[in-house]
Image 1 (cartoon, rainbow, N blue to C red):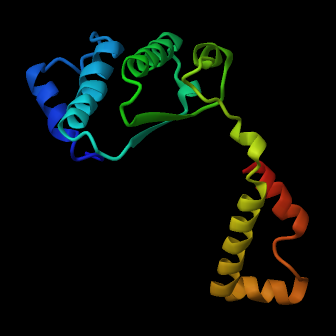
Image 2: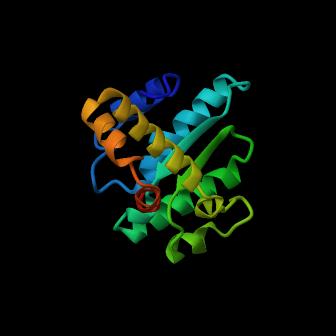
Length: 163
């Protein structure tokens, strides 16, 4: 649904195989028929199509490590066979060892986004949110008038670090 050009191919795959989403169908088959084949189809129809990015968040939270392994291996094999296809995956996940072992290949770029530091952005957002709340709420404004700034700098820092 998010990518209208792909939807008819996904519907066709589901119509052709009613049991495609059944738990006994392998993840590899589901990926091929519901993701890779539909993208291959739209790219073969329209070679100058803009690139697509599929975002996967929280791969490290999947309990079934075998499914994680199968997903990563199937995806890597797909891109080794189709390196020029304008489709990419962005995986936002803690890189636990079982994931890192599979992703340490030339076709993958690993980056530690934690090291990039978003503390300043988070603090700015929180400060702005508190300022907006104070502007809308006379009780908060009155508290600030009597007690000074709100939240206190240390409280803002603690909250930012928690987030």
